[in-house]
Amino acid sequence: MALLMVVGMNPSVCANESVEGTGDTAVLFTEGVYEGEELEAIAETLGCDMVTEDGYVLQSISVLLVVDDSETEAVADQPTPMALGDYVDGVTKAGSNIYFPDFPITSDWYDGPLTKLSLTFSETVSAKYSCSASVSADVISAGVAFDVTESVTKSTTWERPAVSSTQKINIRVYGIYDKYTFTAKNIWGDVKGTGIAYKPMGLYVAQTTYVK
Image (tube, rainbow, N blue to C red; front, side, top):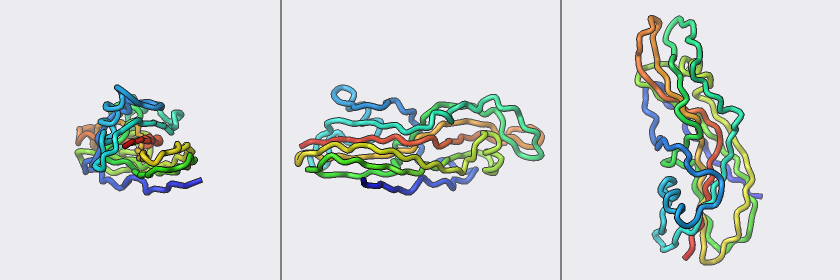
């Protein structure tokens, strides 16, 4: 088996910085093979070309999800902590299975002809967060009930199909997140700012097949 290893997303976003490259789009396309009328819509969502520069035309897109559904419980309505300093309040789950189409973790091309092959993916997805005020990661983690600097590694085996000499495929892997919004307050309960935290949940794998 071929093992595809990649570097995870950067977990070191500062609390008072914007989360860059978050094309914050909910996953609209579930597992399956997409062709015909649905093809253009999913290609636009994932940022895939309908026709490559060397003249290959998009034929189909296969989607695989690797998500830990057991960890998707909302943390909204958490009791306000007894704070001795800054704290996070009003945590709300804004959506589940959020991915970032602008930044696939990896994108690999395979030119035909190729035989059928099982590919093992082992990818690391790192948490991301931002806040309009200067608040420490520890404070945000306590409020949203997960470590905003954590990383998770997900593995799966997927079968790459046989590819003819007139075809080629592109395999893209995206990180999937649960998204939470929150309000940062000071020790007196005054609002300091608002923020967003993304909890890493798994992988969104898209295999695009092109033909010439």
